[in-house]
Image 1 (cartoon, rainbow, N blue to C red):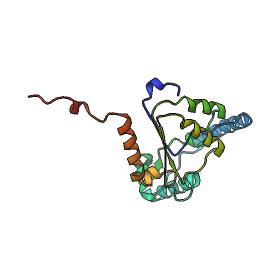
Image 2: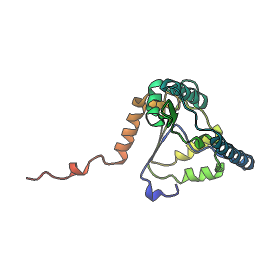
Image 3: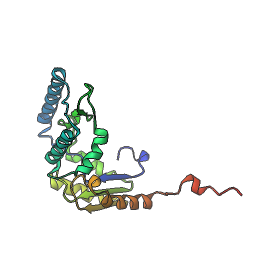
Image 4: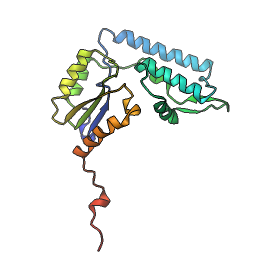
Length: 203
């Protein structure tokens, strides 16, 4: 929306938009966000990040966290192993594992936009736009606002909305449900011919 000249197309998975922040909650949520960051800084000063004794223990923690955030059985063990390929590393003490994630991403967002702002951003998405919604994904915001944003997206002639059966992490659990829609979208909006294919063979 802000820099359309730099964006050729947009693909979104499950989430319809950022969570909005109402004017009546902005002060309270800003206060909460600052306090959470200060508490985390103090925690890190007093003790190092948790070390998990085994890969299996870290796997269990990841699955529990995913269930808490996105609903029960939101990711399979196979999907969790994919996440852990880049999300887990041996601890510096030489025993066990630590997560590589930035814990600050789990805190209350310090910033947020009102519903009116999000509506205006939605209106200004003009590029080819694919939104793949998981039927089992949680509702993270006001359903009425989500529906309003979807209606605005639909006014873009290049917008396509698709629903697939599965939880928030359906793209990891069942990529075969997602890939065809993305491939079709890319094939429709972009030339897949490579530079080598477009060059005539030398005689």
